[in-house]
Amino acid sequence: MRIKRFMAVAAGLAAVVGTGATQAHATAAATVIVVATDGDDAAAGTVSDPLATIQAAVDRAGPGDTIEVRGGTYALTENITITTSGQAGQPITLTGYQGEHVVIDGEQLPASHTPVGGSIPSGQRGTIHQEASYWHIQDLELIRGPYGIYCDGCNDNEFTGLTTRDNYETGFQLQGESSRNVITALDSYGNHDPRKNGESADGLGIKEGGGEGNRVIGARLWNNADDGFDAWEFTSPIALEDTIAYGNGFNRWDFPDYTGDGNGFKMGGGDVDPAADHTLTNSIAFGNSADGVTDNGNPGSLTVSHTTTWDNDGTGFDLGDSTSTLAANLSVADGTAVNPGGGRSSGNSWDIGGTWDAGSVRSTDPSTVTGPRATDGSIPDSDFLVPADGTDIGARL
Image: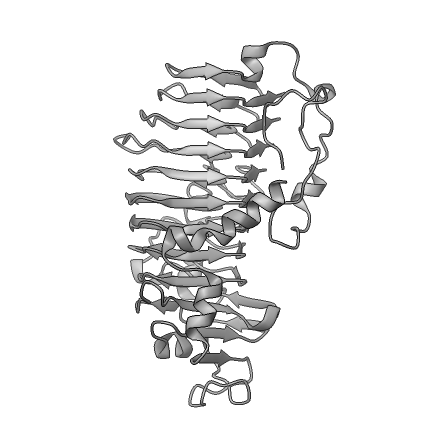
């Protein structure tokens, strides 16, 4: 049933952001720009005469166009910069060609190797650096760049089926005044930041800005240097659902003076903590070096429901600074189950009472939810951390 719901949500994204994949391809059918590793940027940009670089295709694309990238690895010496916007009903689509596997490698980008204590100029942030709206970017793998995707001041975009791994900063970062963006089926892992000894490289960051209607659906965020998800200084509500964050905050890179935080879901915070009413639904945080879910000082009203935390070194649900609503959540074998703060708590494992450990759930084997995705892009159904007695608490993935 959850897969059907995932498909229904994905099909409904057009209503959220003003367009969708099907509409994008229908609108852009007359103008398809093809890129291939053996192409030429002076070419026509067709299947038989492709361009060589994604940037050349981006520079040619306008509202309604589709860029289709043939399989292979595209090693960059300059990042891909997107500044032209599509339009409502005429997004610009950037995708792999007919399911071919596309890897965009930022290892050779100068900013990928910023020294310890150095800063990355804004325009060099991201293997893909985007300051544009009405794009649909899907089915790409972005590796070893100074951020994977960095989107600043972006509205009405869809990001679907992306992998951002082993980047030298956060895998995917959305910031600035950015609204109505939908991130679906993102896998973001192994992101780390030698220049900060692990302080800020998250799997996914929606931070340092504001804007309504941003959603995260079905992401997996794991083994990142800092946090799985980070909403630092984002002042507008963000909705996360069907998402997993695990194994974050451990020093896998032998950084000196390691500073990674290690939360699964960091639901706010800032130098002056802004109040933001984020929501987290049907999600799981496990095996993180700090908390499963934390408000990180956010004084807003968070809503966390049907979410499970397991085996986090800190607190499963650390929401002591917020006035949050906690409903039907499950903490299993965390360092501490909950710090609920001044919010409302009902129907959670700590309200029900009893012993919640490995023996109280059907499975503590995460291999199904961490393995290959289902054919629709969702995280496969599983008995992972489902209460053995059928109690309707926690996530169902």
